Length: 239
Image 1 (cartoon, rainbow, N blue to C red):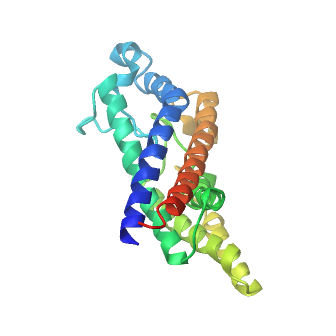
Image 2 (cartoon, one colour; image 1 turned 30 degrees about the horizontal axis):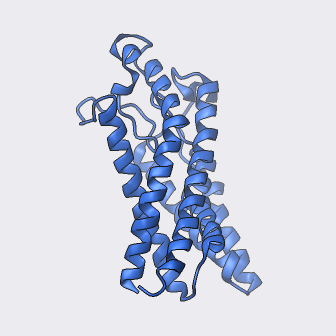
């Protein structure tokens, strides 16, 4: 079983990571590069070489000038690819571990459903309160956002499991409450008179486009990851 989990997670994670990286290159990466130009005042080296200011797509905030960042061009793309593969492999282990705990075979079709569940709990639910942000956008305190994110993901994951797998209506109701409570409390945001100012120097249209594009891109990544995890878990059943 251990070998089956490892082989499935590695195969699905690497392939899904490469797919996600390729998708990012043509969707969100150009938007990040454009935002970095606004972040740097629209001039200087950032305007001439927008890819030289590395930005993690899951962060989307101003860079720490003292922090190490990969150079532009191929170096940046290579580190983005490595990050995407590592992330895909990590999530692949999570999905495959859940398959094993369930104690039943999972094929491609059911894998897609598990992938959608992972996307809903780990990305879609937090994005309802904290949409994906571009470099240069204003944001609340990092600790507060991280704490809210953790509680939202935990509540969404447990709540979704109760809703889908529990036969008891009361437990299903409890699952709905767990998923909703973090949003009732509300995600932390900077105190602003005008919410439009949260985009900082980034045009609101660019920020909105990035938020929607990120959701679609990550959603497709999770669908592919789930499908591959289910496929390989079934294929490696004898491992």
